[in-house]
View 1 (tube, rainbow, N blue to C red):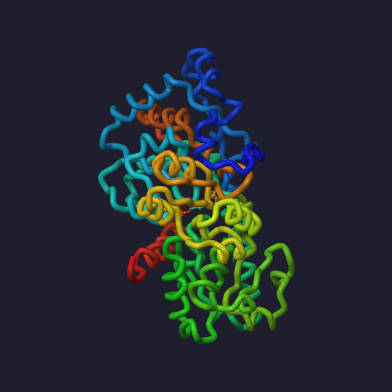
View 2 (cartoon, helix red, strand yellow):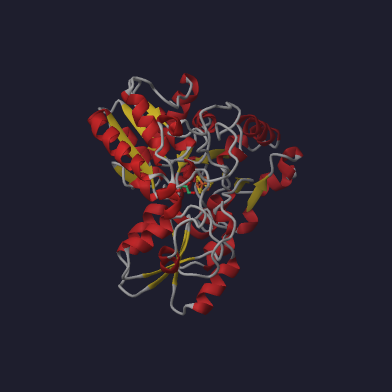
Length: 421
Ligand code: 13P
Ligand code: SF4
């Protein structure tokens, strides 16, 4: 995330200001012509112990110099149908402009699976999304993440050893047999594989309700006494269970992997319906109830629309809640002149403001934050990846080991087979 920059200003205000005060257009024009060496990029190493791939210092790469745009277009044209570029909605505009398809994590997983002819899937998103694409595509296809530092801090909050230890705690409490794991797409392939091995499903923010209903159906229904272990986003799990399934907040407990037995007594585990992993999104975690109250006081009649990764009090106070794709559709259907306060990542909110000049788009938070790891993918990284492919290399390929891939696929297939999707 960036440090607070703009206070209480509408996105239209922000759009009229130069984007990234430290990286103004004049900086771009004064840049020396980039040599190929300028495309030797951050994030080329890999640390297998981390979802993030490599250490990420949090600094945003510079806005891309102009001639990179020409190089990017040329490389894209030369690759033709050998490559398919997927762009998550949180990507920078310069990356979205080159994407063959854009979407939320659910749509992108489907799109990756629906492109058997493309030899290279260039995934402009984060590491867990690229892993899922690798699992869903055939062996001859190669999934490329243009910058290996594009991870997800939420996915990093659960590792497989911690999750296996938590499951042992559930066995010891005598409740594992009545518990179905459901993991958010924002998790490592190893955790998706754990979920598959234990008969569970993956979900995304656009199908969490259906996934939870399905999971409870495996253990006696929502009205029964069965449980769900929800990984790794406590907020998506709590919001869906409480606001869509009618499960009480008292029946939602938080399992803290850094405390013995998750910080819960065997009794608390037994009484719970939702066992929520103690994970969250560092971007969406910044929105607060105060943000909602302030914007309502400032703009009477504003519609507050938030992503379900926000805290429960924010979601409960919002008018509409949904995935990135849902938010985009809501803005498309909105009346001209209507006011919207959007609680999700800033690249997307800025783009929505640009695309809907006839509607008043406001950012819900009074501080500006991007997802810093989504922002790691920029035009130089994407151009570098495409040029490497054209030079006969396979840069930054994301692969999942065979056993994990098999079980993770079973959990992903379960998600893709959920009713009504
Ligand atoms: P969507 O599933 O809505 O695309 O969200 C993914 C994500 O990472 C949100 O933080
Ligand atoms: Fe992860 Fe949050 Fe970034 Fe989404 S916005 S990729 S959950 S850190």
